[in-house]
Image (cartoon, rainbow, N blue to C red; front, top):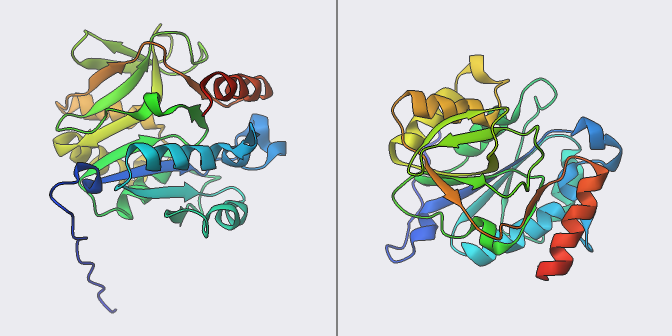
Amino acid sequence: MAVRHISPATIPKNQEDSRMTVIIPAAGMGRRMKSYGPKCLIDVGGTSIIERQIRIIVSAYPNSEIVLVSGFHANQIRDKLKKKYPIRIVNNHKYEETNVLYSISLGLQASVRNKVLIVYGDLVFDKGAIGGFLGSESKVLVDHQDKFNEKEVGVLHNGNEVTNFSYGLEKKWGQIAFLCGRELQFFEDIANKEATEKWFGYEALNHVLNEGGKLIPVEKDGLSIVDVDSVRDIEKARQIILSKGV
């Protein structure tokens, strides 16, 4: 078997975001929205969710690499994006039998960077929602203003550190996480195991905490973000776009 050697990318020392990969898991079919095709291609305000994400990410972190993990109707996503945006597309062929952590693991395997920003592919947000994550500490976005459905995964924290991710908590995880250092290593270690292919992302973040990792909660006043999981959410997303002009 031939051995393929991959040389690390040359990274300018004065561009911190050039050391970062943004991974967008967008492989799932979204059963409640299946008739719309891939959720990331749903039109909100004249632009698909994923195109809006990419434009905001490029604006916030212009030197980062972007890896999108597709699955359901992958050809539609590739045809829509490949020639228009400076991104890499990885296909999760097992999207029907795996969960989001497996998609993230594929994105991690495709990256050569040492910092990762994970942004779920069905989110509509403004630039403020993803700004300020770079640094030497791992962080997660926390919604304390009821932007996410009460049934979504919650976050428990003491003001300085996250202590647990679980359902039934008042504050919600914003489905955005910045990982570096040992937290990224802990996350990668668990994500690459066959036994965790059906895990959700928050389960891997709990593993990071259990291993002794530290996640800083990031709460932003005036947070503008919507997780598009129903037809009603599409209208909420359009309202963000109209009010913010993004």
